[in-house]
Structure formats: C-alpha cells, structure tokens
Length: 301
Image (tube, rainbow, N blue to C red):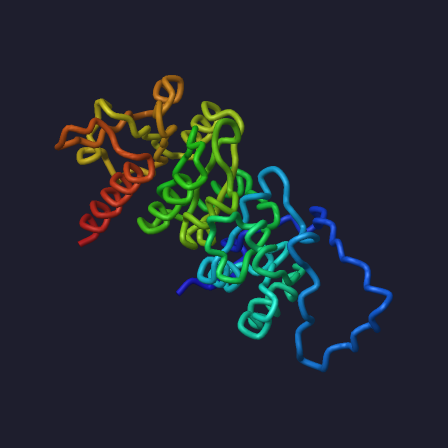
C-alpha cells in the first residue's frame, strides 16, 4: 500500500487562493441568539438555498457524492477548500469534517435545495459536496529528476472525464508520471479527479507549454518518444519496450497532431480487428500501456 505521506507523490494545492465569500443571513431581531453548542457537537446548518455560495466559471464543477468525497478526503484532505454537508448529517460525516478542517478547509452546512443548486439538479449529491483548491502542478524538470518509465504526454484531450479515465488507465498499468499540455488540453479539475477514481492522487503531474519542445527535452533525458496514432508504421506489439519510453496521446477527435508525429521517434498503431477504425483515447492508452507492462514483466521471467 502506498504511503500518502510521501511528499513526492502527494498532490499539492494552492492554499493561498482566495476563499469564496461566506454569506450569513443576519439573525432575526425577534428571536434570541442561539446558545453555543455543547462540546464535541457540530454547529447546525448556517447555509440555505438562498445564501449558499454559488461557485462561478469552472468552479461550478464540484465533487459530490459519498464515495468520491470520502476517497478524496482520506487521500488528500488539503485538496478541499470548502466541504458542504447536509444539515442533520454532521455526525454521519464527522470524520470527513474533522479531516477537512485539519487540512485548512472550511465546512459549511446546507439543506437539500442548497446542495442541489451547488451540484446540479440531476446530481446525486447524497448529502455532501466539496469545492477543491487549485491544483499545483510539478515542473517537467522535477518529474525527469526521478526518471519514471514510462511517462505519458497528453496533448489535446479536452474532456476532463477522458483525462480522468486516461489517468486511471495509466496508473493501473504502473505509470507514475504524466505531463499535460497547457493549450487545448484539460487540466486537473474536479471532473477529472472524479473520473480518475482516485488514480490522480498517485501520479506526479506536470504541465508543459510547447509540446514539440517537451518532446525534445524528453529525448535529451534519454526517452524514446512514441505517438499513438492509427496507421502508424510501428505496431504496439512490435515496439521495443526495453527502451525508456514516453507515450504520447492526442485529442479525442483528431488524434496526435502532425507536428507531434514528426517530432516523435515512433508513430505507434494499435491493430484493429473489427469495423471501427480507432479507439477512445483512454482505451487506446490502456491497451498500449498494459502491453508495455506485460512485455516488460515477461522479459524479467
């Protein structure tokens, strides 16, 4: 079992990012102020449908649901900026509340209507949701210092759910590091985190600007670069897996860009047996990475 305390693998988050404003309705002048709660009891709901914080922009994509939240809190409690808990469920989620507060996050309580407005009317929030902090990426140099093999370079995957599925496949195949392009590529968002099923926690993740330059840096560091693309001259089943490899995957629709193919050492094809001409990017990555892992394992026997 991996130790989440290993700082080289622990995701980093920007704790200096501004908190969303907390808006509390003023107490009614006709009612006496409530007495403070007894020791070890949790404060009752102070947030409702009308005054719950409504994240804007990309922050509208929050993490919700019991299992995703518990998995996130157990592995990386500092990743949560605000934890929203249904009023009355304070004791049910007492462990998560304590961990988030210890990690520097804030806890707010809301009714069902407030949580539905936060997570979306069609979402099954199950009484809990969370707004994550901004993820802090590693640098390419920090990743290359450990010489992970293989590395996955992601260029053009715009759907965060596909990125999450790709991270899940990569980590399952033994990959420990991923480099994500800054342009035209999804980042580590709540949707990607949820789709990765916890895999993102175990990965070292960097972002890069110029993909062509990044490929050159990988080569300079001793990697052979292999772009996954239908019709490539090298089959995944004949690729030399004894080399230190960087596997490049492209967008969901157009695949790996021509300029990236030209810069790669190999353009690798996954032979198709049916009528469909290509695979989803996360599935293609899974096929390639598990084949590399299989052949390397067989070579050790």
